[in-house]
Length: 348
Image (tube, rainbow, N blue to C red; front, side):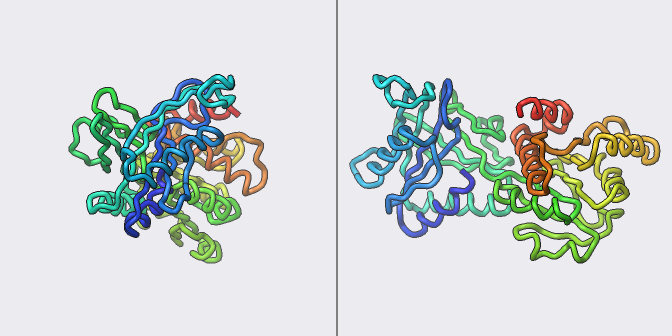
């Protein structure tokens, strides 16, 4: 839903209502999972998806009716059976069941203010979540941050959509996610990685010690730091929400970065290189840098999901896939990076 905040914000500021269709429940084989969102605008256009095909067609009919007919309720919930049998609810081959909640957002002061804050939070990289408190008499839209004092909502704030309608009435979708991908190395892989990551909602920082490889215009949408690899703490602070990708031009630079950042709380630390190269690095990190085994175990290598990548662009996609996994799992990835790395490889 993160990508829908700006167009919803613009529509509301233009005095136009927006209707959301949100997948709040699914069972069996379905094209989209809970948290998938489609929105419809006053001009009949839609953005996002709840699954395509006949289900999407049905959802579009509902949201357009809600947009065009003032007598339609501003909220409703519909269940759909995706049956391949023509006698079923919707003739789709998936065979599962989907529940969609629809809510019309009027351009009121309260809703505009909510999406003002949502846009500001997502653009600044603050952790935030979009919530719907669904009750029999209406749907209230809520924005949560990780410092919320809502005792019911706080335990539900996770990296994936959470359905707690039976208890608190809440359905929650993550929007912004704090933290950056800090890419050490502005060479071929770094240049290929930035556009991939920015398209999927990651903020990026490129850290490079060569002026010719640290040109801001080369890395649109990323911050660029030109500095020595030996004194990283002078130029940035790594947090528990950050992801470290090490793709420098040589083993020495990789080692300098690793010995400084493996003891950090970073969520993900991956370094490019062969198993033999990293085995040597691990030994040096233990013998020469004096790092503890638990810190060295944080290193992910080979970096990325094994999809047989060879070109910089293919390698960038493999790294991005693993970062998506680390983001969805959250802090648990940092505790067992090797386990999740191997599980990802087994899925391919």
